[in-house]
Image (cartoon, rainbow over the protein chains, first blue to last red):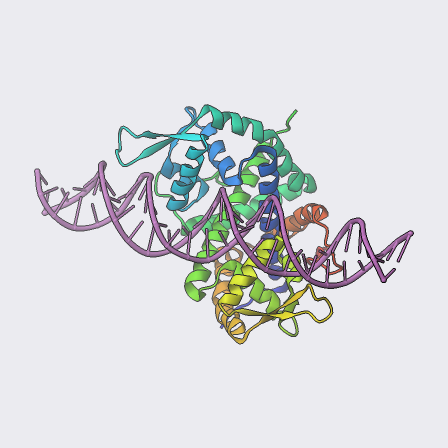
Amino acid sequence: MTRWLSEQEQRTWRGLMRVSTLLDAGLNRELQRSSGLSRSDYQVLVQLSETPDGRARAFEVGEELQWEQSRVSHHLARMQRRGLVAREDCPTDRRGAYVVLTAAGRAAIEKAAPAHVESVRRMVFDGLTPEQVANLGEAITAVLAQLDARVPPRHGRATAAPASRG
Amino acid sequence: MTRWLSEQEQRTWRGLMRVSTLLDAGLNRELQRSSGLSRSDYQVLVQLSETPDGRARAFEVGEELQWEQSRVSHHLARMQRRGLVAREDCPTDRRGAYVVLTAAGRAAIEKAAPAHVESVRRMVFDGLTPEQVANLGEAITAVLAQLDARVPPRHGRATAAPASRG
DNA sequence: CGCAGGTACATGATGTGTCATGTACACCCC
DNA sequence: GGGGTGTACATGACACATCATGTACCTGCG
């Protein structure tokens, strides 16, 4: 027999969906307008820019962002066409490919970041007290524990910070 | 000067994005496999099934789900092709269209709902204590207050439950 | 009345995500 | 060291979302 959601769960759940929808649409729109980047572009560029040499294996991008493999392929191909990233063969694994941040890619992320962070602040953190941020973080950590159990990381790399609690 | 995110905000933010990604992908996949419906289909069908007569104006669907108008048009057209909904002219406004749940649509949502609710339980609520659910709900309400201020409803209809606090 | 501006919805082009499948290579183990 | 299994990535077909634009209609106001 189906156990439906309680009133409170229902409200929470629909709220969460609504937040996701609004946040994704709003951030995407602002990012696109201000910098010509999509949110997906942005995430890839951020990840690359955080590596010491501005490069990563394609599968690492997929793991970090939790993208399907074919999404990674397609998206990197599009970004390559636009000159935001380049490809390099991997010397130690001939199947593999490195994705490398180009000068244009680095310029794009550096130009886009301040306005995007500002958007995130406005849309999310400005409305929350520090205590609410902490509570939100805790809830997220708990949900992630659930979800990550269903999608175990294949390579040793940690996927997310493990619960700043403590 | 850009005010970047603090360590805690950064972790929370990336966690939230990760939750969104995993949840959307996971729920979509399970729904699709178990019932042949996308999450968007599901949301539309739920909304229609909750009206007393199984019908709503197209723009109401858009407002409730916070969809772009053209997304509504395109998606309803696809659902109509699949026989999940039908259209009817609006007698009081000849520009307007009613979207009506068909028998097939109602059957589809009733068949899909139990497994979907189960998925939501497994992926979200099973991992949270009641207190965490409450905290999450509170944080969501606060963020929604921010976001909804940016997208005011045009018609009188309430868009979401207004903060069960108190 | 008549028209100016706004609303409801449709449509085509384009970018994006997923699924199924294919190819090449790595690795393990007998 | 050769074959089986799994991994890294690409690709084509299709579903989906968005933007720009178009059409019909409503509404308020002179």
